[in-house]
Image (cartoon, rainbow, N blue to C red; front, side, top):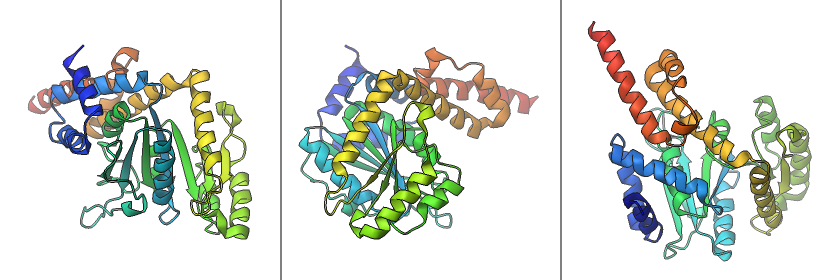
Length: 320
């Protein structure tokens, strides 16, 4: 058994303090080969865990995402499943500070070591994901049975979150017109499950349900038809349907052979985005020639190796 495997097992059995320290170490020592190798082993572990699933929850502010996630945490803990949450907060474009969401609405048990919540600032990616989101989610998926990723539905949020999760849940609010805006934005094929929250608002909720159904249409070409539910965390309406749909979508991915392919695509997208941001389109095109199934299984060391290689090439060109 490798030291990394031993460390992952130890970390999985540890408390919140140790996990928080490991995630902080990830960012502090990001460029070291030791951290990258550790993350690649976590990536392999997450692929091999049948329980490990990553669920994205997105939607506009005030739609009830945090309350919904708090409810999902309780439901999963009742099934004796461990739960990690990655809450991505948009950052102020003026101060650079994180516009933190209301985590108190999740109301997790502070003494339950099998619940862990990590907040990440989106930094300069308003509505999108932090550069450390994918590494953080990867490590947490190796440690927890369910990882829930929450992101405010602003700008790039929906498409960015879709690129790091197994199942994406879109939340809209009754009478808000969110479903129409979603349709106008051309994002109708992104969610695997769509919810109208606060379903206890009866008439408005029903109308929003039909608006959303018409906006999303039929995406069966992906092998999965988007499921739409009315949900109320207050009354419990639709929560069982949501959990069933999440289970069915996970089964669909595995039975259709899409699970590993989707995770590999996520690795490739993260690699390409990271290298493209560092070296532009020319560097990205050069990198694509090196990307194959083997190095996509070790995305973190591959990104470090290619970055080091391209920096040397750039310095040689600049110095000539």
